[in-house]
Amino acid sequence: MILSKVLEEFTNCREEAISGRYISPEFITNFVENLPQEFTVSIEGNSVEKRPIYSVKFGSGKTKILMWSQMHGNESTTTKSLLDFCNFLQKYKYQNDVKNVLDNCTFFMIPMLNPDGSKMWTRNNANDVDLNRDSQDLSQPESKLLRQIFNDFKPDFCFNLHGQRTIYGFENTGKPSILSFLAPSANEERNFTFSRKQSASVITHIFKNLQDDLDGNIGLYNDAFNNNCVGDAFQEAGVATILFEAGHYPNDYVRENTRAYIFASLWYAIEACQKDISYPVEDYKMIPEHSKCYCDLHSKGVTIEKLQYKETVVDGVILFSPEPLEEVLGTGVFCHKEVDNASSFKLA
Image (tube, rainbow, N blue to C red; front, side, top):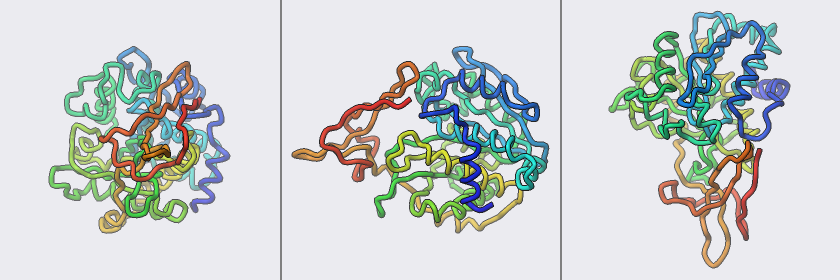
């Protein structure tokens, strides 16, 4: 399906009840419990603070795809795209392209893996543990739940859905990183094992379909191996895993534009999985790697001050407060906006 058609259908199916970036666990409960009967909804377990963690299963095909979002509680853009995808499947289930997807694939979706972090708008869970660094220790109930689902479902592909900070861009062009991907390494040598080749081919298919619209704004994460990360651990286990990262579209802190392109990325990824589309690894390696070269603001004065927004949530409203850019967050050579006086703003 051509990109203009995919984006048109995204607009028709966008979950209108979601505004802004904050999604509460209660919203997820209401959404999944009102899905029609072709979606099988289950409570797989509970978080540290005993909030339910839901799964949604649909499709009947032999290609099994496991997808999860909001492993980090303050990364909601891909969650919205997953809910949009559910609406899309409902609306167009009799359209040939969609019917083929549901006939060829079986999906196991976890829309919000970290409901406690999502409620508090924090990266980590209620025990202040990064779930994406817990794949070996499995010290947290959310980590154990995901691993058990992985073991029981035995997926052919995993979609690991995240949201990246506004600090990423491309040093040689000055463009921001709107979308980024990674075929995680399966070993220290970073060899392209069979499953990693599959992951790389899926990402190449996404890239080739989106590059005209997002010319120079799509990149790769560094592929250093760390099997404490879930993607690396699942790739090490021989299952093709694709990291999706929703980045910052210029002047769009709500990330509605990025949301649309993540939706399109899901469609093309699934197209590649079900049709067994294959590209050489060299095509994947041609996608540029991004780096931490951006900050949110350059505040003009005697010297330029580099600022980054800190995000906190109060009563379901996200407050963006400018703070000096920490050195660990990158160089801040480029900025998303130049200002005379930096100020805070709120985003529901």
